[in-house]
Length: 203
Image (cartoon, rainbow, N blue to C red; front, side, top):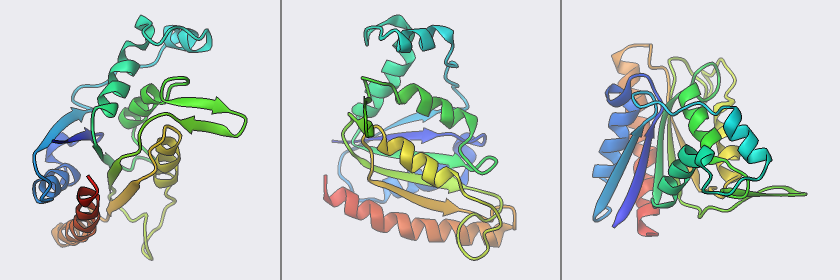
């Protein structure tokens, strides 16, 4: 069985172009016996990280301390899956708050990474990760008019816990009408199909 974790970080939830394309790509991947776990980070928001969590981290509390309940749940969930799909909009040049909170729960010292003099060393198994990034304007290519801090940030954040096999697929220009949307979806579909086939062959 191939277990896929699908994170949805956008306000449109299952109505978003990214979500529909992710589900379509998974269904068409040809990977046998797929089980998909969905986590909608907007419909079911995560609790904020507060003072108790901060104190537990800095005091090196035990991994099973109650302050880490949500962090442990999310890390364990990620560990139990073979692939990761992230569907996210670009909000003000980077990840939306809902996805950032998931990242903050998952990146935890002595659980998902070790701190070394050279920087963070990830403790999690690498896995194929597909990130669909929606934006109203353009952030990739010759029509890009804004900086993209989402891609380098998310790539670095995931690498810090051991996930480096990460592939980004832009769904951009979505406010320029149905033709632009169809073109963006078709291009992302083509690119993702190629990468997903290669990833599936390695399972």
